[in-house]
Length: 293
Ligand code: RIB
Image (tube, rainbow, N blue to C red; front, top):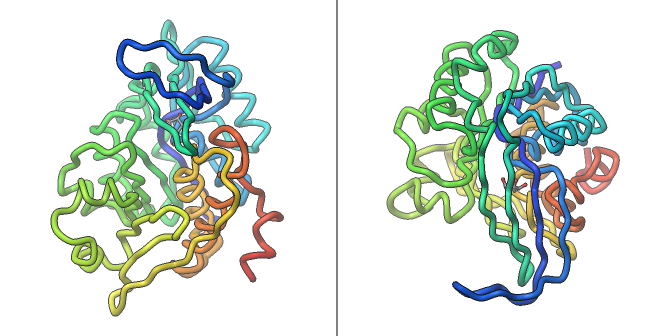
């Protein structure tokens, strides 16, 4: 079976929920505080492992309690952590999340995630075979993302780049990725002109997520919108990550692209029903009935 390798960030999320968002210089009282495991890379790995098998995390944690909590969480979710190493005398990445008005805003402090350099993970890349799937996001150094995508292209490894959070990328990054999954905002920033034109330039490759309305792509002949699923929203954090982890699982299972996107939409719809980035991520048993496979 194809393996899924997530190369990316792992963080501890420090979450505050509030009905009043402070303005500059203002102090307000919030409603709730909790810590929970997160980081876009880790979230994608956990989402994939709940739905599929053979999921491996390549990343870096600090030598602190947050790092150990993250390792235990990966183990509980059957994510292989052979490629997750401790960086001495460094802190684990943290994300500082404010939940308000059914949405989130996030400040990420990468810390050990900045040590996910190409040189540091080169040896681990050797265990990835042609046909395996690599999933990347942008909370690790840009140079790593660029070099890993070039490596995947050369070795026949399927790559999915989730370009979140947005940063400007070289043309080679777009060219080397097999699949790119921005949301609408990221897509506007990455590709000039109309969305339809960008989709047509990258058939079966550019998949733009449009929230609970689903996701769009161009199949070479026509524009396709794979419909989303609406559920009651508790916390939208991690919905995009769930989409990406599930998309990788769809490809791992050998689904056609539209079916893999349907699985991704369905899994993302479950994810918003729980608190925390990973709280609502579904298992395969939970989604299979609605997927008709
Ligand atoms: O995509 C959601 C994630 O973004 C959170 O878990 C947080 O860690 C930030 O990186």
